[in-house]
Structures are given as C-alpha cells and as structure tokens.
Image (tube, rainbow, N blue to C red; front, side):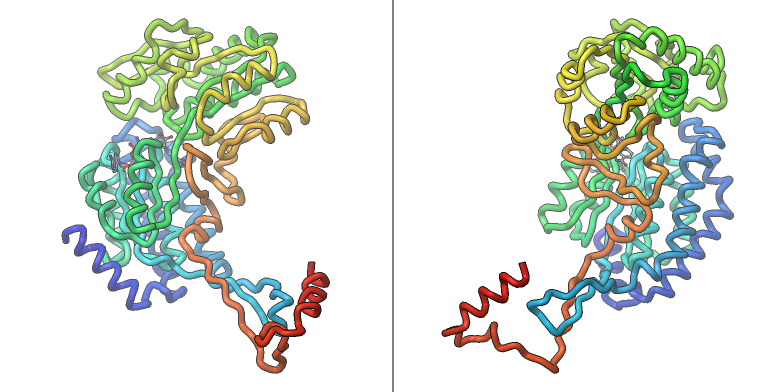
Amino acid sequence: MNISALVQAQKNHFASQKTKDILTRKELLKKLLSEIIKREKDIINALYLDFKKSEYESVMTETSIVISDLKRTIKKMHHWAKPQSVMPAVLNFPSSSKIYKEPYGTTLIIAPWNYPYQLALVPLIGAIAAGNTVVLKPSELTPNTSKITKEVLDAVFDQKSVAVVEGGVEVSTQLLAQRWDYIFFTGSVQVGKIVAKAAAQFLTPVTLELGGKNPCIIDESANIKLTAKRIVWGKFINGGQTCIAPDYLLIHKSVKEKFVTCFKEEVEIAYGNNPEDSTDYPRIINQRNFDRLDAMLKNENFLVGGNTNREDNYIAPTLIDEPSLDSEVMKGEIFGPISPVISYESEDDLEKIISKYEKPLALYVFTKKKSFTNKMIAKYSFGGGTINDTTVHFANHNLPFGGVGESGVGAYHGKQTFDVFSHKKGITKRYNWLDLTIRYAPYKGKLKTLKAFMKLLS
Ligand code: NAD
C-alpha cells in the first residue's frame, strides 16, 4: 500500500467511529501486551544486534518500561477516558460542565534510534488507548529493532488502525507531506524543526521530544563518591546515547580532585580495566556518529578513557579535563560516552556557561544545600531533572517528560500520554428550569445590576 492510500484507509477507519469504542481499544492493547511478552527475547536480541545493547539494559530501559506502561494503561484507560466534571461558571447558572476526551484521529509517530523500542512503543500505547489510528515510523539506524517492532504490531493490528512504515529520510519526508491529525516526534532539534514546519502547513498539533546540552552541577557539599557513581551510571548507560544524559559536568573547584578519583574508580567498577571487553557496555550506533564523537576527542586532555576502536564503533567512557567553551565537545549535544568536566568557583561562573546554550532537556544538581537546589531550579529553564542523581526522573510516570524551548514542545508519560493524544472538548450543559434575564437585550437599565453581579463574582 502506498503512503497516501494507507493514510486514507486509516482516515476512513477513524471516520467509521470504530476506534472510539473503549472496550475494543482495551482488547487490542491486551493482545499487544501478550504479543510483546511472547516476543521479549527477540526484541532484546534485536537491540543487541543493532548496537550491542546488553540484555540487562534492554530489560531495564526498553522492554520493562513498555510492559509496565501497557499494563498501567490497560488498567487505567477507562478512568482516563471518562468525561471529567468541573465546576460550572456561576454566570451560567443553572448548568453543569464537563471535559470530554476526544481522539484526534489519524496520528503519525516518528521515533529515534537511541531507545528504539521504548520511544516508539510508549507514545503508540497512549495514542491507541486514546482512540486514534497510528502510523509509526521507527528509525532506520536500528533495522533489527525496527523489523521486530513491525512484526509485533502487524501480528496484533490491522493496517487501517496501526501500521509500521519502515525507512529513512525519504520515507519520513513522504509521511510528513500527508495531512495528519497529530504528529508525535522524538529526535534531534534539527529534524524537529523540519517536522514543525511540515505540521504548520495543516496546523497539525505536535509533540516534539528533542535534545540539548544538559548541565550537571556538583557543588562543594555533595556526597562525592555517590555523585561519581550515579553520574557514571547515567552518563554511560546506552553508551552515553541518552537524550537526558548529563552532557557536561560543572564541579566546584574544591571537590574536583576527589571527584575525578572517584569517577575513575566507578568506571572501573562498572566496566573493568578495559571497557571494550565489558559485555555491559554498548557501542556507538554507526560510523558517522563514531566520527562525530571522535572529532570531539582531538586536542583534549583525558582524565579517564579517551581510547577508541573505529572498527567496532567503540569509544571508552571518557572524562575530558577543562575543555575550552569553543572546543568541539562544548559546541552542541554530545550524545555519546564523553564527559567534559569544568570547574567553577561562583554562581556567576555557572551562569556564564549554562546561559551560553539553548534551554536543555534536563539539568542535574548534586548538593546537600536546599537553598542551592531551589535557586538552580528557579533560575534555569529546562525540561526536567533530578537532584542528587541523573536521568531517574524519567522513571516516574507521574511526572511530565518533555523539553522547553529548543529541547521540545509538550510532554508525556503515564496518563499524560493519553492526554497528549486526546483533544479536550469543553462542554457546558444548561438547564431550563431557570433563565436569568440579565444577559439578554434590551440592556437598558440593567448595567448597574450587571456590575453589582460581576463584583459579587470577582
Ligand atoms: P534524528 O532527528 O536524526 O532522527 C529521528 C527520526 O527522524 C528518525 O526516524 C529519522 O528517520 C527521521 N529523520 C531524520 N532526518 C529526517 C529528515 N530530514 N526529515 C524527516 N525525518 C527525518 O534523531 P536520532 O539521531 O534518531 O536521535 C538522536 C536525537 O534525538 C538526539 O538529539 C536526542 O537528544 C534526541 N532524543 C530525544 C529524546 C526525548 O525524549 N526528548 C529521546 C531520544 C532522543
């Protein structure tokens, strides 16, 4: 089926009203859950083939997230879909008001390669739960995961309700030329702008989950050993290819030396003397990204790591000492296992560096000082973050996950994913047993009463 025929078939299916039956949606999601559980080993294997992602990390950051999101959605979707009563406006007395959740219609989800399974499936679950049809385009850079994702979804859904369209930029461009009712995109800032432009043509609403340069601040009061351990984990999981990984470290000068020693120890504890031999350490996705990252290593001083193997797309967990702000590694999002460390002495130093960049997707603060924490949260604009750890705010489905400014538009996770894919229709129902005459013309002689009435309400 060609792309416009596929989109038309989905539009026809949506127009038939069949996707709006909540019991049907729930049954489909239950079928999806059993298919996903049945194929979990194959999914894990595909992730390994794509970039040597270990079984442990695949379970922790991909399959278990999808399974628990699916279970929660199945359990709660009935409740989420219910019209929600809100207080009526006194001016409308007597009346009642409700918010109805309406599926947008035919939606497009474009996914990236770095968590290729989870970042495709979690939005898709919300879109189906909310009653939409979906065309999913997984990343071409993880072909094994893309293939298995298609197999899993094809086994459960008819193309007219959920279809996976595989391919790269060309296919993505063709998809973006269609008229969608909602587009959910996860990927780079640069492509996010292309998506926003395509969506603007039809005023299609979008969620853009993008990236940025995430600062990680460590002040002099932080528990340095634990800080190093948690940064090593959050930075090097998935080979550093995580949108919310700490990008660069800003450390108070007085604790830098201790931190570097602890960081070195933690890398060794996690990945051994030679991380290239560790079965827990993933590879860079492809040679183009390897070369991009390799260029960041030129002319820098390494406190940890720095070695590479192009044949295997391997870059060691690396700590770069005090790079210049004009250096390659400090230009844009790193998106790899390279961690620059820059020392600071005052909050002004922090500001000079952080405000040089666009609003990041995440910000981390390691400190024992409540006032410092509050100041950092209030002062800087960023998507979300964690205090005294890295990346784990992602795991709380009660928190909105998304960026601000260049790091994204909109947020999802948990109930919010259902809401993202639902238009909220506000409805007021008036009752007929009383009809106050104050709003009706002729207005002559009523202004004083109206003003008194409005004063009473304010
Ligand atoms: P990318 O933008 O290159 O690709 C994402 C998707 O867009 C892929 O499916 C790709 O095929 C498609 N695409 C690429 N070029 C396109 C074009 N010119 N026109 C239309 N479609 C195009 O991103 P990526 O390399 O897959 O992922 C890495 C980026 O994604 C990083 O910047 C990272 O921070 C960001 N990211 C963000 C989140 C988040 O939740 N905010 C999560 C993961 C990754």
